[in-house]
Image (tube, rainbow over all chains, first blue to last red; front, side):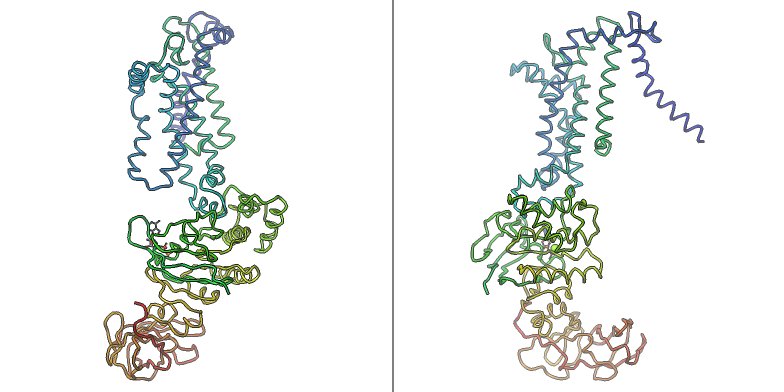
Length: 257
Length: 344
Ligand SMILES: Nc1ncnc2c1ncn2[C@@H]1O[C@H](COP(=O)(O)OP(=O)(O)O)[C@@H](O)[C@H]1O
Ligand SMILES: [Mg+2]
């Protein structure tokens, strides 16, 4: 029985990690096409990806949009989470559901809607539209993670702080913020990675010279089937793992998910 | 002495609901400790929240030292509150919890240090300054809450069932501690409790509350000796309460006993403590349903024509086993005479 469950565990792990191993290995290939097992070993593709200007530009855009949208989602999401957790709102349940809607609505639809109305009708620059679209997608993460943390925090400490002389807002920053800081950091990491990996919304929102890294990678692959795409994917995965690992070590990310 | 707090016909409600407290008036003098005593849900916490400024009255006024503070926000009132749940700041140490109000008032570092040390010592927690408040026992957390509220020297300190989460022994110890602190600092306090013994032990005066109103206000001695309403009588331990109905005594459930001796005009009800019921002789009789040994006394439940009578006898006297018939008396001399017209 134990043997069986252990074998099963390894099978699942192989299933999950196998493709990753294939990609990492393929990136180290000395050959010119994406193959597995790799034809000889070299670092040339890992070096080459840093010299492709499209990758550089879209990487920078992805980071900016990721950070910007994450910050915006937190600025909008934390007050929403607070209001949901602390006040008996009219239509509170409806608000809760609406806030989660971007998790359910397919990204393709959000992307198309943004393209049709924000880009074509309002003539907004693609970068701004990307920022808006990603913010929309990330708000549910910010609200959920921060709500969970607020639900576990007594609300009477705010009243205690007010009675000791703080204003309502002052009390929030003095006794609520320090207690949800971990959750906010966790929401930040989670949101940033989500934005960075986002494909469907980004797919619709690109213009001449403006595209997010995953979109750029898709396009690149259509024309050039070389191992650089494997090298880049491996690096991105490594970066995400590093972020998660660090947050987990620093504050136990898993507590908030 | 000056009146520190005046509640003037306060009516308090949550949202558009029925009032939780209605037309409440009360004045508290400088240095007094007034208790609000009443069953759960009678509006004690609601009144405290209004005095602290956390709840805006539907109508009525609150005066502090003669000044109308009804519209003054809670952080400007100088009223402290010790929560039943303590409400300590979980991310802060004992020192920082106690220093919180002083920091909000932008006191100098030297003042903060000396005041915090003084308060922490006053509640017996010297040496615990750098512990996180969440690492303390319930009793210690209670002391931190007290030190935190007192550190800013509030004009008025409200305590909402501060000892109800502690075990019985600790409760008595903290009760004495509280009385010492109150004397030492001369702080005016309002103390909420549903524990009659606690109110009797601590208070200058007790306001017995029932359904959002004060039923009776007076010194512990006055309430204990002469409850003004059947409700107060029950709360003060007069567990056998009868309404005088012509020449009969009517219990709450409608059962009746004949009235042997008329109490005189203007008496609405009579009430006896279990100790005031004499067993073994008398005009009434009943069956002992239960007898429980309490150490220095035995408590009896007696089924009679007038409902269940609670009696208590010294442990040395004859033990009456459950199931026996017993005669008893409700002597007028041992009764509280509750006047007509007062209260509900
Ligand atoms: N936040 C609230 N919202 C609505 N009703 C409340 C709230 N808090 C208390 N009440 C109601 O007000 C009444 C008095 O409550 P409370 O003052 O807490 O009683 P006590 O402290 O004497 O036990 C109760 O009927 C209670 O149900
Ligand atoms: Mg209460």
